[in-house]
Length: 197
Image (cartoon, rainbow, N blue to C red; front, side, top):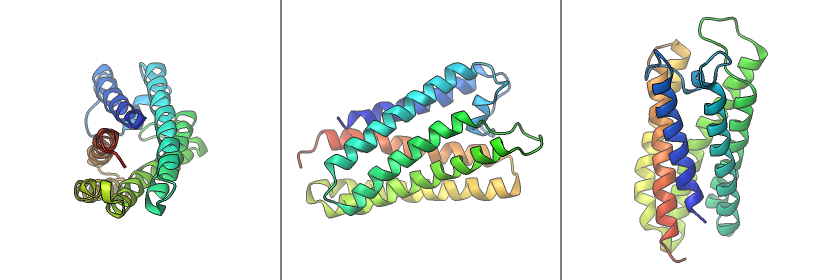
């Protein structure tokens, strides 16, 4: 059951990597959302892949919540998985505004939903760390989760500062933050599937 998280994380990472390779001129400095701009080549395929990711993340969040309903912090993680997945669906419905274009309501909604997703990923890992520590059988997962939550938070902070300054570093910080989160998601999913609790 927990392997839904592993599959979701792998799909996300592969979508970003393959989608970036298929788009001419796309670099690590560009936002992930640029892969789903209305005029972007392969937009439909990439959007379908992100939809699949969000479906799997939503399922994983429900499974996580049912399994760990007895622990406040892990239940918080589960609810945040659901919120992040729903924000992901919204981001596909409301694509970002192209760079150097006039801001639109659609683009503003996209940016707000993207913020929810990034902040949500930080909440998931931090609350997961506290929750794992409180469950004796899961305590070995807490230290790695603490390290990963720090890295996810620091790279997300870098993305936020870069966005405020309209720096070219935004895309690389964003990819680092979400990439680390997906790695943690996959690792914790595999770890949880092997532990009896």
